[in-house]
Image 1 (tube, rainbow, N blue to C red):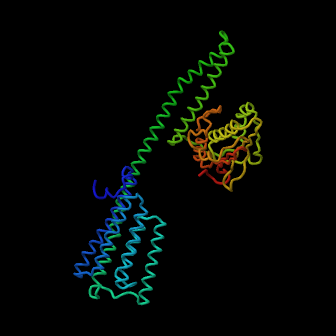
Image 2 (image 1 turned 180 degrees about the horizontal axis):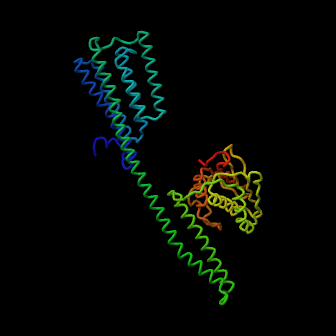
Image 3 (image 1 turned 30 degrees about the horizontal axis):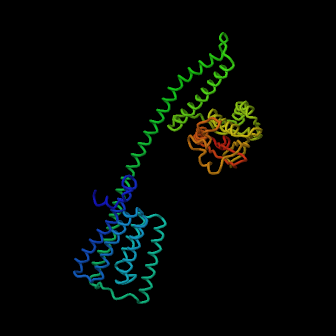
Amino acid sequence: MDVIDWFVPPEGRDDPRKNTRHRGIAKSLLTISLVVSLMLLGVVVVRGHLPAVEYALFAAGILTPVLGAILIRATGDITLGLVVANFGGVLIIGVWAFLTGGIISIALPGFLANLAMQSTFGNAAILLVTGVALAAALVLLYLSTTMGWVPVSFIAASDAPGVMLTSMLGSAGMVVLAGVVVARDRARVKAHLRQAQHAAEQSSRAKAVFLQSMSHEFRAPLDAILGFAERLGGDKEHPLSDEQQKGARNILAAGLHLGDLLTQVLEMSRAETGELSLNIEPVVTEQVIAPCLSIIELEAQKNSVGLVNDCGVGADRAVWADRVLVKEVLLNLLSNAVKFNRAGGTVRIWCQPAGTAYLRILVADTGVGVAREKQHELFDPFSRLGLEEGAIQGVGLGLVMSKRLIERMRGRIGFESVDGIGSTFWVELPLAEASASPG
């Protein structure tokens, strides 16, 4: 472990991003100490002997950045270390300026280096606070100078040009060396990010290939099971008993449900890898809403739920969409509204403008709604909102797929829900008459 590694908090060493950031800040703080040490040597060469107070100020300037780095290492709090280093720097340079001429002191360039360092590493809040402290120090130096409060400078007039050169070179050296450290560490962070992105893309592709492969592998035996179940139930020569017929129907129902889940998983993997092709065209909303209501009607009757089509004039509006995929989304919203409704409840669908460029299609139910603490999970994959043990089937991919499909069509999806009263889900799609193309 090198010296810089020691200044990295132990809990951050295994995280490449944190490790790189901590190393960069430690390098920069130690660079400040090194530059101040070189400035001390330069001032000694120019002037020979220094008064004790100046040695003390140089020592404070060398040790304060090291103290900031040690605090970061001990606490893991970058903000604390930077605050100590920067406020310590403002105080040291302020005292130095007060003792060497006030607002016209040769020590003033150090303020700019201090602020530049803070703007490189600190956050906006610390930068503003440091800026206020620096402004206050400058105002105090101005008042001290104009009111005649500053003592006689311990730097002789003949030494002033050399000391000013040393101060300017030292301040510039701090900024340049810190900038070099930052540039190198940022390049290292970008390399880590590229590697992580490449690994994530490979993982995503591998997952998609696996899901596609498994979906196809399951499909063949599943089709065989469904085929045998249909043959058993439809065998006229050797008819099954009522109990056996019921079992065959259960096999078919479970098999069809499993097939639907496999289809959702396959479409999910295709959407994630960008392999899901779109055919965007002007689609009249009534041409997708009416078929969806017809398909869902039988399920609604079984659940004693009424369907209400209130699209009215909005049904004649055309939107940019993929006809097949928007039907899939609406079917999913309608199916959820029926499944999670009360017996005797209603499901209402209607359209309304959403600004000048979008049309909103809304599906409302009179079900139990979604509890506020669960609403953030609605669009999470495989989330069942605590209904895993209930009688309603599903795997928790429908809304996730709907969101991704709508967003692929440059649309938006959202919901409003009141626990115990019901939910309203909506999709917004670009109006075809509002622009010449879907882009």
